[in-house]
Image (tube, rainbow, N blue to C red; front, side, top):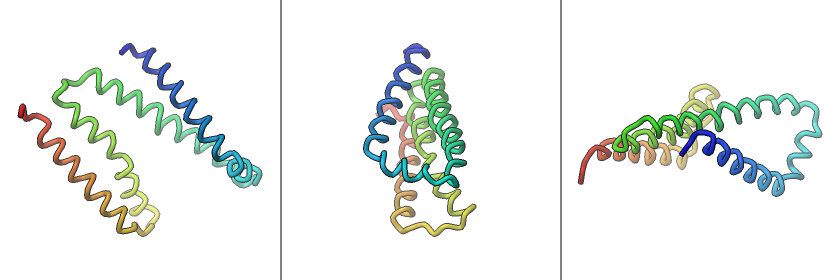
Length: 124
């Protein structure tokens, strides 16, 4: 798929999802931003959107275009391990306690990543 088509489709999908999420949560959003203390967080949200979603998807597209098909499971596993790494960083930096469900999810995800990487090059 050409890069400009990918970015166009991606922006349409993100736009539609953003409108749907806003419609379901408009009351909470207005209450949150009516408090002037919370206005600073809009800048953090914009930065997170730019770096966390748009650039990540662009890098994912680039990786898919440049890699051999046999390496795709490894790329997908690495890309989708970001939430797991975020949970670990939250635990380490903010000293938040992780629920047993989060720990089990992390373990299951790591096992899935190991399985995907181990069997990605097998021709079976």
